[in-house]
Amino acid sequence: MNTDYIYWTFSSAAQSISAFIALLLAGYALVHNLMATALDRDETLDEIHTALRLSYHKRLIVLAWLTGAAVILSLVVVYFTRVDDPVSGWVLLFVGVIDFLAIVFGVAFVVSIVDPKKYQKVAEKVLEDDQVVASGISQTAPVVEFFGAFQGLERQIGRYLKDKDLYIPSRGTTHMPHSFNQMINALLLNELIDSEFRNELFEINRYKNLVFHGQVRNINEKLVERVRAATERLEKIL
Image (cartoon, rainbow, N blue to C red; front, side, top):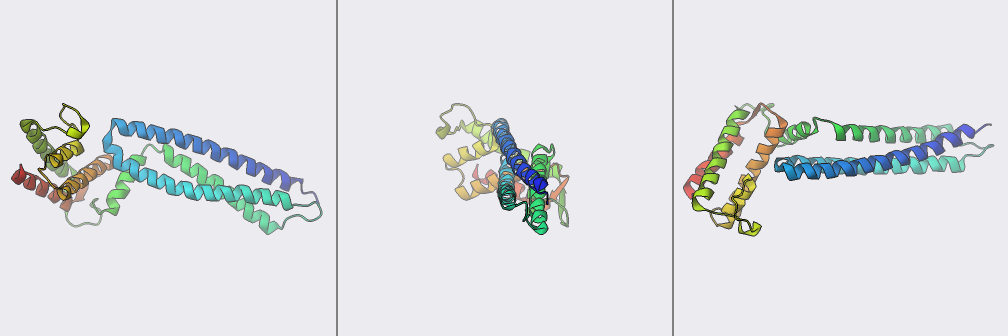
């Protein structure tokens, strides 16, 4: 019985999958660096990138085990194949399926990385999991209402810091902080708010970033109420 096709097929599969995964990991390293650069330019992507990195890591774990199994099993088939005693057809089929799945999962991972809508999809997923998106929720509010409330909160903090000439000592700068989180830290460092309220404001800002990148139209009305409650609380403090 001619078993050359078994040697050729599975030895080539092991080499091809190994090369494919090596190129995939090199490309992912490049994408990871580009994500870090984008985050330096736009800190509103922090929540998106955190969710993406977790998702990519989980998928890479599965892909690593799958491709490792594919390469090892392909080499095992080549090693145990004999001219007069070929490997069982069921074993060949099983290993062939593993090789096929390794390639499919790798291609799917590449497609997900280069998806131009990945930020929007991740933001929508996180918002849905946190029940912020208005799908299936009776009490809803237009997203423009949320952004209006948030801008009012941000302006209120910014005006106070400017009027009181407050800065962030830990940053060693004489310039006013520009980001919302930096302004919140300035309030905390000057003992105007406690850490619990700081975390609440950070959480509101996190949702603001996700809503912005998720491009949703309606959200849970409770999120708008949280922004207004924070604004009222700050008015009493400041």
